[in-house]
Length: 186
Image (spheres, rainbow, N blue to C red):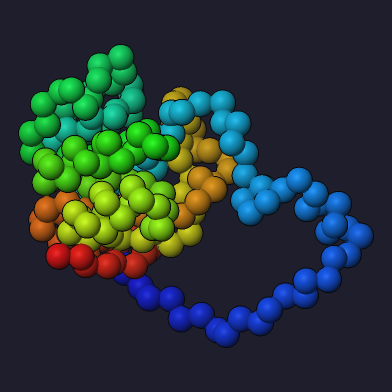
């Protein structure tokens, strides 16, 4: 169900350090509570996300044993170099390479991508704001799954969104029952 959050006014917290908070903050900037030392780059899409979006024809970033689409390209096969036909599911490698995958999906014009909602980045501006048909901002933070299928204990550490390329995919996201907020772009 698509919802809009109505938040109460916020008050500014006290900025006076206390002994217990001063020590905890040393050497930690914004986001310092997140680890950049992940032991894997395989983070599988939560099944409830896929179930809410319907069937996909191709997943160019698939993982073995995790059904996401009729045709799945799994490493060492380079999904970027393979043919994409029909509706594409894309949970791309996260980081700078995300934008290369989204550029391909935008050119293909038929699919949905799951990415972090880093709305201020140059890649998001170029590949999402400028090319997508719409964005579904998921409420809360996702818990991805490990390569063995178990749900990660910790959340993803950042907000996520689903990005629609093609009007049919925009229509699916606009009417899906996942907790989130839909923003139409085209």
